[in-house]
Amino acid sequence: MPHRHREHRSAASILFKRLSDQPLMFRFGSLGRFGFALGSVCLALGLTLGVEPLHQQPPTLLFFLAVVLTGWYAGIAAGITASLLSIFVLDWFFVKSVSTGQLDWLDVFDFVTFAGVGCLASIVEARWRTAHRSLVEVENEIAVARQIQLKLFPSESPAAPGFDIAGSCIPANATGGDFYDYLPMPSGHLGISLGDVSSHGLGPALVMALIRAYLRALGLTQFDPGTVLSEANQILCDDLEDGRFVTVLLCALHLESRQLTYCGAGHEGYVVEPSGEVITLKSTGLPLGIDSDRPCVAGPAISLQSGQVVLLMSDGIVESANDQRELFGLPRAVETVVQNRTRPAAEIVTAVLEAARAFRQPAPQTDDTTVVVIKVL
Image (cartoon, rainbow, N blue to C red):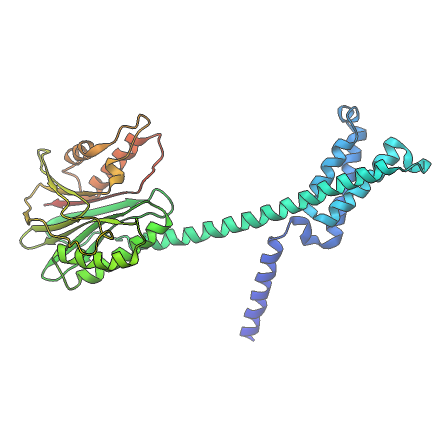
């Protein structure tokens, strides 16, 4: 019995969906559709005879509109019925040809014209409804993809004694190609990655999920950022289509010694001193996905000191442009970090994102924006 109840409920839901895909009058059967045709013609007659300004206009105007509306909301058959009724009413009340029996070919021409317009309205409505339904399905699929992608971002900051770490990503569209992640690594290392897939949208979002999975898998057995990115590059070169690439900055933070080792595949990072001086973590290789024979090499290890802030950003921050096409730039981002250096890492991330947004407004966001902050306590 419970199974049969579920079957009945499923059948009812399918029937409701099919009915909802039809115009309103189709849900009331033939009586509703042809009643709509009769009602629209009667309304057109009442308005034409009863409203003085309309009474002075050509009488076909409202009847023509009645046929169009009937074809749109009630279908082709009802539209043809409304056309026939309109011709009959026009001849009876305004031409008097029906009462005298003087019908001519002009009535046939008018009927064909009215019926053709009614059929055209019905066909356009059906195609519009199909296109609208397809658009809604695509939007629903994109919304699901966005929810899945949001779950790929870290839900909380990693436990890292002596450090305050936070990050955030704001896609330009429903989905994006930017990502950041915290990777568990062997030998007491914590991996921190930030990447940017070329372009943005649904395609880059799929690539973003791939590279994130590769880095997580490879980072379980390797703590050298150069080795991890080199192996990831070899895999991506087989997976990516020509012209697609990924810039990645991978940092390996040794929690006990406070040493930072990094590898930049077409991506830079920055160590901001309390004074505002900046040490650039320069790119050490090509973006991933371009050349499988070019290994990624890690840069020199950096000993971090209290008060320093490691700033990782996607180019959507520094390349945020205002109405005058002026870029936000690195100096403004660094200045924002220095001004907020005493605040928690999460608030520094928010301050940088808000500063870029305020600088850009009222221009829209055109690229994904991602920021990760590693504050040394």
